Every structure is written in structure tokens, then in C-alpha cells.
Length: 75
Image (cartoon, rainbow, N blue to C red; front, top):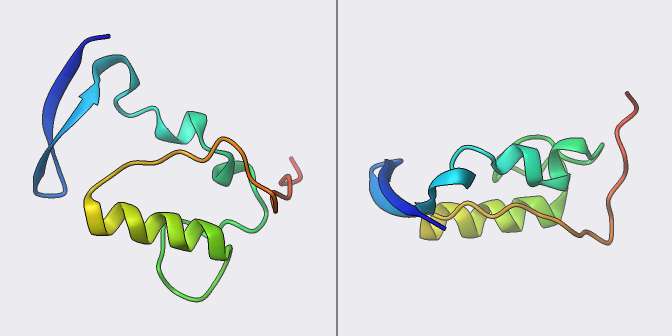
């Protein structure tokens, strides 16, 4: 896989070129009733909040592929 570097929130980070910008397409959180967006406030899923906090602290992007408390959104 080919990697590239780009500026993500003020920091240079590496990413696989074909996965750049694909986070939402691979993350269970965006299809979960408990998810209230990327936020550190007390609303929504405590697991998503913890993952987001880790992402903010270390300038990461982490999709969630498996989750023990997932609740499918009604479509």
C-alpha cells in the first residue's frame, strides 16, 4: 500500500493513500443510535467518547469495527 503525509489538525500524519478520508465508511459508530458525533462531552456513547479522546490526544483516526454495545440506527 502507498502512504502519504498530510496536515491533519495542524500535525503532519501518515495515511494509506487509498484509505484517506474513508473513516466514516468503515466505522460502526456512524450507524449507532448511541453515537452523538465526535465529542468529549457527557452525551452519547462512553466508548466512542473514550476512543475520540485518544484520537484527539495523539492525532489519530481510529475506526471502530467491532463493539459490544452497538445499537443499529433505524433507517
